[in-house]
Length: 297
Image (cartoon, rainbow, N blue to C red; front, side):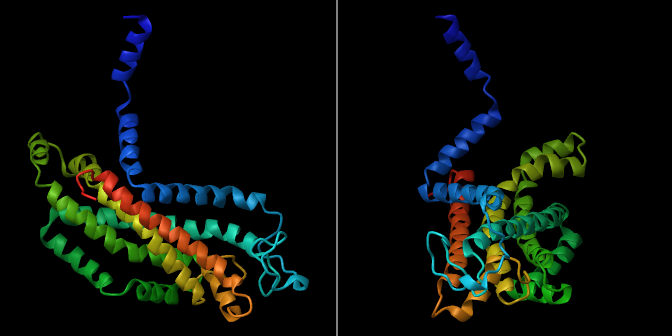
């Protein structure tokens, strides 16, 4: 056997387990072509939201009354609105706002919901009853109504919309992590670690939390789509992004009065909302299967 073959064998044996697990995960995800398309669509939209505004020559809020209601053309790819603003430029600039609301609200909701759920599930008893009754109260309100109530109190703005959607996300994360914690804390390895003298904090954060994150990741991916729809709905109702912010829901609201004569004003922001939501939903479904290989298609 040559030295090169020996080196390759050694390299294969010492391959980073994390790299190997990532490769295995990608192989499982690739079995679902729709999920893979969703993943690359999300990746593409994230890249466009970052570099797109740098490549557009116009400002999203520049008005040109001489070019109002221009149909899609080589000069104006998506046409212009009732104020002569370039819709394509506004879509590109609004992409970072829409994705930002989705990711930020889910991260905020997870940072609050995960600790609440894991404490409730781990300690049980009276603590569990108190926390779960509060969560049940939040779940009793439909998501859009709860968000509307919160925004009505805080006032209409992108920041307040993000906070409202994050608050609505907390119960979902709390219930999912609680259920997983209830199952995980009964496992034998947790009893063994506790018998060795490990404290509650060490057991929770080092041994239970890493093993219950899979359903949370899947739920977070799916909830981003819900967050984007909720934020767009609030902006459409005039309680989210305020003019002239190029947020897709607000752009839909701008175009609803011109559906018959200039339908493209509302069509393009609506189409992008559909694409983003669909991409996150099909990616979330594939992610669920990839993180749980035992699930049958």
